[in-house]
Length: 318
Image (cartoon, rainbow, N blue to C red; front, side):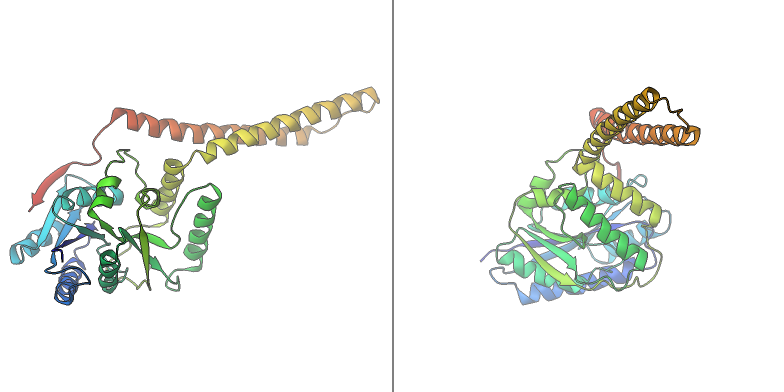
């Protein structure tokens, strides 16, 4: 029998309306897990680590109060907003020092926290990574549901391993987290990298619920940027698509030259100013898009070469 420690990592940004209730609920769930003692695990210890991602409201004040009331609640405060993925990495980096099991979940608890108990059971049975997977998207709008499914299909076609309908609600073992943290790139798309780790995995299904209060921290603009980051950080397929498109355009140009020569030999006048201008605009657009995609990769490469820190920690409540 092994004594294990469970740490729940919560990235939080402007979550003053729901943070206290969420933490109290998670503490109750941890107590239930410790009392149940999952198969093969005895004396489970548990705590919570909140990463304040540069909130502008009273989130950090609430974290300090929660820590004062209950030492099991710990906190990390960023000097400014560095983003959700950086908050996750910071939390995992700190928590893995003492924890054997690490669960990441958003502060709004739209992902069902009651499933953490099942995750711990699967960990006890030998799974190093347990994904929380949504079994339906009824709570999403038609637009969000359609675009999400299209995104997963696109990544699959590009050769990216991704668990469909899984966000950042998961349990990872200590060795799985330590392996993840060896990936040092600045633009780390966590949910795309974890399937590459190669450890034994399991899944628990859950139904996502509406937020109790507050607004989503992922509006359409951020979702699009996040999706694009996922594509460009996991695959060079867009560059290859540009190459294919360029080759096709060259073949089309050769065909048009042959067509023009044939018409000239036959003595037929060549009309088509409109088609010529359309072609020029089309090729100009393709070139600008191509330069943009290539520039995106060069920009990411520049960021990696600079090797700047992912985040700056202002305060740690241990």
